[in-house]
Amino acid sequence: MTLLAARSHIATARAITILTGAGISADSGVPTFRGPEGLWRNYRAEDLATPEAFASDPRLVWDWYNWRRELVATKQPNPAHLALVDLERRRPEAFWLITQNVDGLHHAAGSQHLSEIHGNIWKVRCTGCGLVSDNRTIPLQTLPICLQCSGLLRPHIVWFGESLHEDDLRRCNEALRSCDVLLMIGTSGVVYPAAGFAAIAKQAGALIIEINLENTQQSSLADLSLQGRAKDLVPLLC
Ligand code: BV8
Ligand code: ZN
Image (cartoon, rainbow, N blue to C red):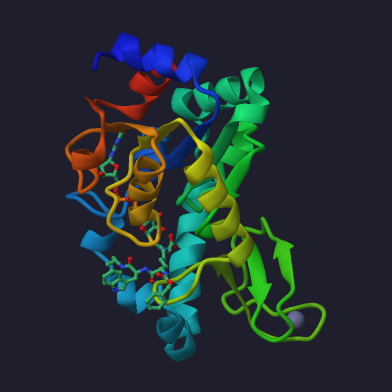
């Protein structure tokens, strides 16, 4: 299938679902996780992005998230984020965007039909009373405390070994089973449950289009794999 054919599938799709990963934000200057420049080159996921890590050393985990908050605060949505907003505005009833990114850049760009399945770096959650709140303070005090119950706050992020929020999973499953096109952008496709999303959409009959710099674990499911940068290819396709 050619790029032109893929464009026409997107333009005429009854419903389109998008799955994005760190690669779409790489073009805004946010580091990815895996690969030679990825965050997990210098940090071990299990030391920082698990409930066990937070229980044993909350200060270390907060230091890492504070550093990432400072970094992300300087970044802006790029043409790929903006092209998805345009697509949604043209076809709001036919569009659902699922992101694994926690950087909030889709939201900042203006996407509304959006599931941030791994959470958002600009939200905190109380480990005592469970209250979720927006928090854009930079830098946060090293061990931030809930104003309501004085419990320790944690990032409102889904860590390894934690379940995704049930409402998000239900909404994603609906969007995956009902779309005619699934567009996967900038994800290595190795973290579950998102790594199973292409298979769900494919089984329901969707056409799968992938945009990435390289082949991924999901490429064998794709009807079209476009190799290149998200900021160039997404505007071309949408
Ligand atoms: C769960 C938050 C039920 C931190 C993140 C063994 C087998 C199968 C499953 C498991 C297993 N062992 C454990 C599991 C479950 C585990 C899992 O999948 N592990 C994997 C690694 C094996 N999953 C979970 O624990 C999930 N919960 O399953 O609940 C359960 C519970 C208990 C036990 C079992 C099951 C929770 C997942 C937590 C996800 N949270 N981190 C934070 O962000 O602060 S994951 C982390 O990876 C990020 O959040 C990120 O969103 C996610 C996915 O990564 P990508 O976005 O794909 O990024 P990556 O760097 O990998 O790739 C970037 C891609 O972009 C590359 O392909 C690159 O080529 C491309 N690219 C780069 N530049 C560009 C580009 N493309 C285009 N343009 C460019 N410019
Ligand atoms: Zn509280």
